[in-house]
Image (tube, rainbow, N blue to C red):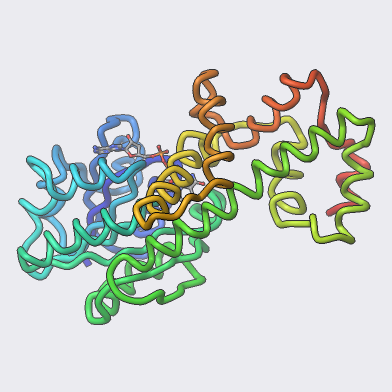
Length: 304
Ligand code: NAD
C-alpha cells in the first residue's frame, strides 16, 4: 500500500518504521528535518508538506502532540486534505479530544475522504515492538481498509464504536492512568516524610486497595530508579488530563481530581520539566519535601 506518516516523534518514528518493515511504500513529513532524515535512511521518501504526503498516499497516519496540530496538518493550508485523493483515509493516532476528532472527521467526509481514529495505549517500547494497544473508532468500511496498516503497529485492537469513540476511550484511559500516577507520587512522598520506606509501603500496599499498575509496574522501571529519560513527556500527560477536564466541563461536570493532577503537572512545566518523562513528577515531591524516594536494587528484584 502507499502509506503516509506525519509526526515522527518518540512514538511516531518507531510506528512508521514498523509500517516500512511490513513492506508498504512510505512517505513521511515532520517539522523536524532530523526526524525525517532518520526515516529516509530506513527507506522512506520525504515530502515537503502534509499536502504532498497526502498526494502520494492512499492512507496517511498522523501522530502529533495536540489537537491544534492535527487540525492544522489535516485541514490547514498545504494540509493533508488538499492532497489526499478521494476515498483516501486518515488514521489519526494522537491523543486528542473526541470533539476535535469528530470535527476533523466530518470535514474530511464532506470532501469524500475518511477518518479512522486509533489512538494508542502502552509505551514507546511497545511502539518499537509493534505491540501497541489500538482503540479504534470510525466507520466499519474505512476501518477494514485501514486494518493492514493498523496491524503493523499494534496487537491489541479494540473496536470502540463510531467516529470519535477511539479518542474518547483514550482520553478516559489517560485521565485515570495519569491521576493515579500523580496520586501515587503524593501519597508516597507523604509516607516517606513520615518515616516509612518505599519498600515497606510496597509490601503493605500490594495487599490493599492502594495497589495499582503505576505503582507495581511503571514506577519501579523509571521513577523509583531516578530515571526521567524521554518516554512519556509531562507536557503530553498534562495535555491529556486537561483535555479530559475540559470535555467534562463542557458537559457541565467538574473533574476535580483531574484538575488537581493537572495543577501538579502545570507546576512541573513552569519549572521547565515539560519535556521530561512523567517520572520527574516524583522528583518534584522529593524537592518539595526534602526527601528521597528511591528503590534499593535488592527490593526491586523482590517486587519484580
Ligand atoms: P513527540 O512530541 O515526541 O512527537 C511529535 C512529533 O510531531 C514531533 O516529531 C514533532 O516535530 C511533530 N510535529 C508537531 N507538530 C507538527 C506539525 N505541525 N507538522 C509536522 N510535524 C509536527 O510526541 P509523542 O510522544 O510521539 O506523542 C505523540 C502523540 O501520542 C501525543 O498526542 C501523545 O499524547 C500520544 N501518546 C504518547 C505516548 C508516549 O508514551 N510518548 C503514548 C501514547 C500516546
